[in-house]
Image 1 (cartoon, rainbow, N blue to C red):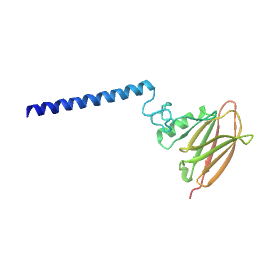
Image 2 (image 1 turned 90 degrees about the vertical axis):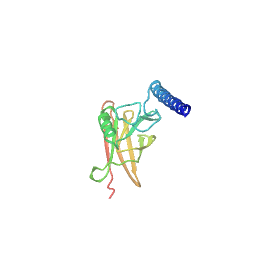
Image 3 (image 1 turned 180 degrees about the vertical axis):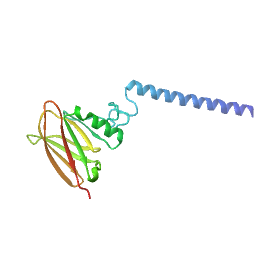
Image 4 (image 1 turned 30 degrees about the vertical axis):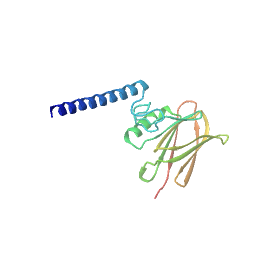
Length: 165
C-alpha cells in the first residue's frame, strides 16, 4: 500500500516536471524567435511583429499593406498609424457600420494592377509610390472606384460606403 502511494507521488512529480520543462522550453523558443503569441505569417493582430494592436503587415510585390480594425485595439492602432501610410482606406455601411471582406484592387496610371487583396476589416493602409491610382473596392456584388493621388510627402484618404439595406 505504502509502495503504491510512493509510486503515485513519483509519477505526479515526474508529470509536473515534464510540464514545467515543456512550458519553459516553449517560452524560450518564443523569446529566441522574437515573436510572441504568433508568427510572422500570422495575419491577425495577435502576437504579430508590429505590436500595439496593429495587424500583421503584408507584402504584395513592392506594395506593403495592412488591414483590419474589427476590434477596438486594432481599429485604434490602424487609425493612429494612418499618417504613416501613403493611402488610408475605410469601408462602412449604414449607420457607420464597419464592413469587412472587401476585395480591393489598386491599379496605376497605366492600368496595371499593383495590389489585389481582401481587407480583413473596415481599415486598410497601403504603402504606394507617389503617383495616380484608381482604387476598386467590391463588397459582396457591389463595386465602387475612387481616383487617388499619392503625394511625395503626406497621405491620402479614401472612404467607401455601401448602403447594405
